[in-house]
Image (cartoon, rainbow, N blue to C red; front, side, top):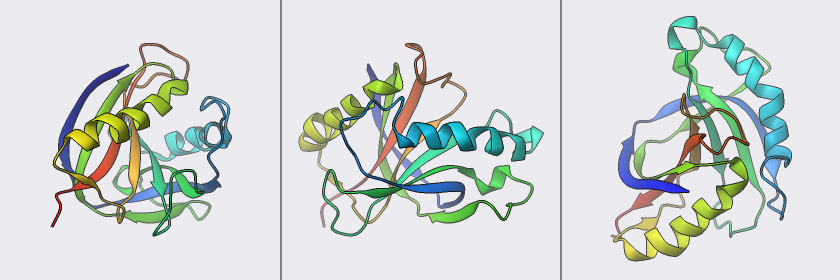
Length: 167
């Protein structure tokens, strides 16, 4: 269920993690290749984070090619902020995340409901706002201490959609 939507500014940061190329299909979010990536990388990211930075925020970042259309393959990165790491291991990659304005949709429920967030943002929020989608920046999922697991009805996470005012 959608809990709230608000605008927020994000400062640039470096994301550290692992990336796959994901092709959207009608798969359950709890069992698709993105879920498999998280199963593989989450323990590794947790062990690398400095104890003083726990609990950690995890990011699921969607990097789309210029001109990409809904349903096109995109790079998906399971990551943490580099500021949470003492050092970046060779088996992980670093990508720059640009800053900017975002529409933040907060959701409560199992991860299989993630499609309803995209439907709400693109079908309801964006058309009724003064903003347009900013294709030049990635959108990302934020999993912080409110997120428990992918099947918990009380689990909370956010999706940050890049937006901008028309010129």
